[in-house]
Image (cartoon, rainbow, N blue to C red; front, side, top):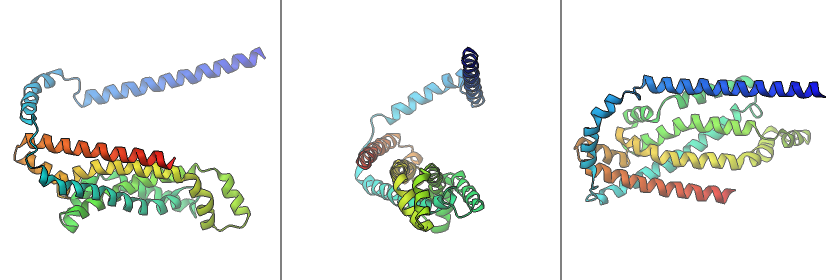
Length: 265
């Protein structure tokens, strides 16, 4: 018994040492990344302080004189986030079911679709926004398409991982009872993972609202277009007012998302 206990302590000590070594390696990697990006260059912060003070003085107080002109762009930004999220779910769920190891018809297909999802999320929304603006013109439509395509890669991955970790026992019982693959998915898989999928979807909708504001900068409609116009005209007091308006909308959207998650629990 003492020998076994000593072996257990040695194994536990080795595990702790490995974890500490990994944490130290991550810490060093973070320090190196900060150094490469110039974070420790104090001189740059000192030289940039007067410019930051000047910019701050020009942004305060915020100028809300044109607030009526921002209502429709904010509405468009909200509509883009909702439409982009809906299209993301429509695309992500079937791809996730085909990519998850426990629901895919063939492992090779699952690996292929995981690569496709990785390709989707590897291209930033703003690049996709530029591409779709060139393809379909200015407005909210390219923003919706950019959000949906990029987020399909991310949401599809999260959906597939949630499906992969579903309890296999109900699936095995359904298959033993002679259920088809579609019936197994509908009655044994989706009921288990639906709360997780709903959480992922709501979080992505909250993210989409913030991303929609950025996409407007490249001509994809929404409040970002107004923000870019104010920046080009060097109206920093108006920029701060638009940013505050976006902040209020983000808080409202996040509050709605939190309420929805509580309701679905």
